[in-house]
Amino acid sequence: SERIGYRVQVQDLDGIFSGPELAIKGDLQLEGTEEGLSLGAARLHSNGGTLLLSGDLAWGQVLSWDAEARVDSVDPSAFGELPAGEINAQISSSGSKAGDKLDFVAEVTTLSGQLAGYDVGGGGKVEYGDSVWLVDNFHLTDGRNELRLHGSVKEELDLDFSFTGEQLGALLPALKGGVSAHGRVGGTVDMPR
Image (tube, helix red, strand yellow):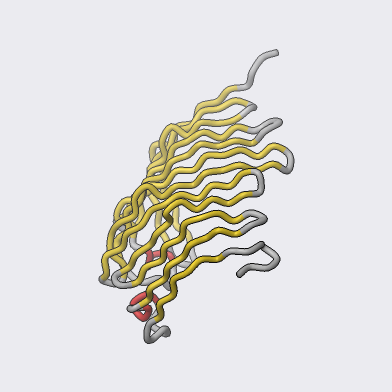
């Protein structure tokens, strides 16, 4: 049987979106068949920031993906009621879905920049498979605010957490004061302890 194939190259992508107002320029190239597609590169530019995407998507008996994204100098305030800043990140995800079975990995390799005048950092990995969530050293920091998670969630819970929020008002001005919580969640999903 003859396979259907295609190749698309967009050299001058230009769009404006509302709510919030967002102008996007860029280019992309992809190719594929009736069984899937490969995004060789997509570069999207808006408000001084850049989003680079690449990856593969396949469908048929099994839906599968393997993708990477790089964010350079993106200002979160361009997307609505978020504080101004400049965010840089490297993110990847891969996985598959066959019938009711879902497996995936999502990893933030690097997260850096500034948000509301404070340094931002982070990283970590989240995996899901066989009804088990694994969280591997997931962490986010913004100034003196920090969230850390590590462990697993399945029938039995085994999740360590740490949250320090000494400057919550920097993220959301309506929040004043601070909070700190550290601990472990155990037990079962129905009866955490």
